[in-house]
Image (tube, rainbow, N blue to C red; front, side, top):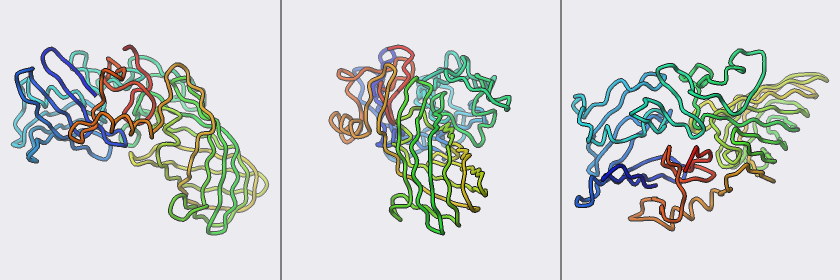
Length: 337
């Protein structure tokens, strides 16, 4: 991914999971490019920058809402030079793109203000419910960024049919319609319990059929439900009428919740990791790019094994600087380009 600011150029490098790991920076056409490497914490915050020799050149500290508290060097001295890589780097809290002029973070679908703890514009997906946060379309991470994360300013909702049978080892299958804030929809089939390594399902004892309703706040598009690996932990109980609740986790932390009303027998605590396949996808106006195509395009334009996209063959979002498309490392909701 390439960005130009005046005479300065930045080539950002992403791994196969879409995580930013390095930048090749060139001050002007007469200087050599210098590569810096990013370190993240478990929430995705960029906490420090290293040079090619493994030396710390910059460190960041944030409050829970994303306000930058300190920008310092290895000796904990404040970095005030505007041309230092620490201040030139736009990726900060949660790896969001930070606009230093406005003080806002760009989350692909909308802007977030860490001072007011709110999105500047409303969510494109409207929901209604008993919780006051359901109708607050500008709320960020349900007012609890300590345990929630919002990678794109939107979330994905699913609804469908599911059945499972458990006696210590279980089998689960479901078919759901998924909807995201970009206007995209997908029909997806998920299953667990057919393979101990790939999609294990452990539980107690139950037999049920339900209509799961899921909310995934760490997914930015329907495609990410099948591209990411999710871990479910929950319980269910009933005799005739049946109700279950699953908490969803991903590599980034607490990722969502699934409510399972239905019918069945037994009481159950379970954990499972399903395999999800997309049967059909309907996109609004953004071309679909599969994970395999992403890796193919990234490898095709590699320079010294750095996964940098060729700007001549790829459109880029001018707000966040990422390539436009679907999947990890891409901007699926460009505001303009």
